[in-house]
Structures are given as C-alpha cells and as structure tokens.
Image (cartoon, rainbow, N blue to C red):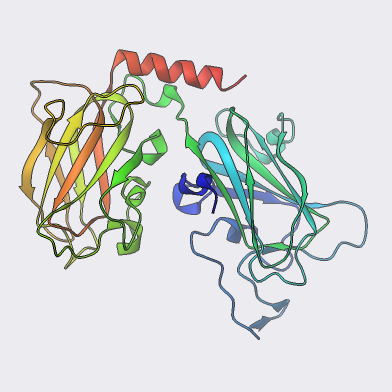
Amino acid sequence: MSDFTSLPDLALRGNRASVIAASDESFEERENLINPWEPRYQAHTFGPKGQEYDGWETRRHRGPGDDWAIIRLGMPGVIRGVVVDTAWFKGNYPPHISVEACRAPDYPSVAQLSGAEWVDIVPRSAIGGDAKHEFPVSDERVFTHVRLTMYPDGGVARLRVHGEVVPDPALLTGLTVDLAALANGARVVACSNMFYSAPDNMLAPGLARNQAEGWETARRRDGGNDWATIRLAAQGFPELIELDTTNLLFNAPGSVRLLGIDHHGDEPLPPPADPAWFELLPETPLQPDTPHRFRLPRAPRRPATHVRVDIYPDGGLARLGVLGTLTPAAEQELNSRWLSSAE
C-alpha cells in the first residue's frame, strides 16, 4: 500500500462523512461507498434486483451520460491520495473513473454544489475489477467534497480519501476545544504497539461502539508498558483530560500517565526522560468500561504541542481527549494555513 493510506480517511462514515447524492443507485445504495469495514461478499445471495453486493452499483446505461456520486468529507483537509476499490465487482465494474474535489463553505445543498469550482484530483483513469486502485494526489488545497464519476456505469465497493485534516480556525479560536481530536487535525505520530487496532482510533469522533473502534495493544510479557505520542491539533494549553475505557471490560489499563511537551521544528521528539517533557497527569488508576475526566491544575499553565500517554502495563483506550485553548501563535498559524490553502 502507498504511504498515503496511513493518513486518516476523510471520507469514512465513522469520521462523519456522507454520500449526499448519486446519479443512480438502482442495484446497491450509494452509502455503501464509505462503510468502514472491508467489502463483504456471499455467493448466491440474490435479492429482487439480482446478486447483492457490498458497494454502490448502478444500472446499465442505454444512452448518453455517466454515473456519479458526491461525498461530503467528514473533515476538511488536503487530500494526499484516493483508493477506488472494486472488490467483488468482476463483470460489472466501470472501465474508467475520475475523482473531482471542491471546497464549499458552510453546509451547501446538492444544488449549490453544482455551481462550485470542481477540480480534477484523479483524471479519467482505467481500472479493473475486484481490485484496489491507488491514486496519489498532489494538490495542496483544502477540499470539503469529492465527486466520483464512473464511465459509464457499474459498481464500486469503496472510496477512500486519505489526507491531512485542516480544521476551519473559526470553529477553534477563542473556544475550549479538543486539542487531541482527529477532526481538529491531531494525529498519533508514534506508539509502542497496535496489534489489535490503530491508535488513531482513540482520537476519532463520537463514541466507540466496540473494542475495535479504540486502540488496543497485545499483552506485554517484558515488564514494560505501552504508550502513544499524539501531535495535537495545534499548540495549546491543556485544561482537562478525558480517558474513556468503554467496552474494555477485561483489557483496560491498570493505570495511565500523561506527559506534555512544547516542541517545534523537524527534530525528533526527545525521550520521555528528557526534562523538556512535563507531567500533565501523574500515574492514575483507571476503571474498566468507564469514561474518566481529570481537570488539570490551573497553574503552572504550560503550552503543549504533543502529549504522550503511557498505559500500565498494556490494554486499550476507547477515546482520548485533551480539552484546552489554543495559544495566540497557534491561532495565527491556523488562520494563515486555512487562508493560503484556499488559493
């Protein structure tokens, strides 16, 4: 897989994306395009419209025109790559596809999007059946919507739109926000173990419905402990920590500790023993299947760009939140990036 596939999927249903319109969905619903699971298939599962597929499938064209679907990204961002997956579509896949993107303010209707400035991020390209097709994207602009076009018709199982989240600063500045939210641009940049599920999961929107929607490590046998380092959405002042072990009944950590650091530039982060790190939350016991909230002392108030969460000795977290306020420098930086990425 390409490097861009490690970035968040901006078009994932679990990241609050939506397929808001499609030209046709006679055989299979457009919403299947952004389901989080891998496409499924069972032979000889025939409904009133034929074999049932886990994807979006349109009728056969008998005239001019091509089929399309518009996806509202769950998080605005710079798109680094697109995956068009035709899993299980072997005789009914489109021979060619293209992907366009646009940036539309607020919450536009489908009719309003028709007048938006759409740009090609994946030009018309040949694809095959029952395969994942990866298309790197080099456009540095921030987009909010994408449009997948099939030439002329057929079926696509999944559309993945991987990229870097760029939040609208108008929704962050002057407010208490979750500095560790994926939707605000935070990311896990390192972790000790992700055997069962990825650590970015604990930064995802909403509540985890099961263990797989959080971060969970393998069982440690070496006497050490597991950890993850999160690059915050921007430099900010942490004020409240949320640690949620919901659904983790027998594999929650016994305790947790959080450190913070104000780190700038491209140099690697120092080890946790370095004095540049400061303690946000001392080692604290956790209960299984429980949301925990810890208000931090008001003084000393130190800015942080990263936090490190140590869990003892192993286990998982459904969600991690770091509520706080942006520094003036961070507000200026976010505003500058948001404005420059519109050009």
